[in-house]
Image (tube, rainbow, N blue to C red; front, side, top):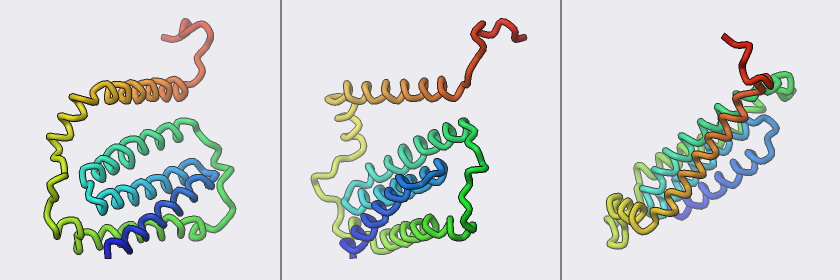
Length: 172
């Protein structure tokens, strides 16, 4: 059962990623990428890494994708470029992918293949993982946090828009 779910989630992640790359509308591409990240989170859970699966949903599918949506919406894209196909033809891929992910989630919730055997000895608790990340690998964590800070500053700078060359002398 878990092997079938793994392959279904793998195919779903591949299809969602392919649709993400091929969409012309940025918001549609982000929605497909969110679906791909949810499928990857379920795959991590299925492989016995529930903490990584939770982080995948919270950090990537949640926070970063919402940030991407805000950035895309700040660009004020032209709504006249909307596709000419009827509305149901545009929605069926995301509905189908979301339904597959929901079905796999329910199958994992009711048949939980990872929970039947108990927790193996090689699993690290969240506390042990945190001590390792902020102890031995603290430099890597700090570098990643600075990269995210630079990305946020860059997004603010790009989204802020053009200001007059005088720097705001005419404002009140």
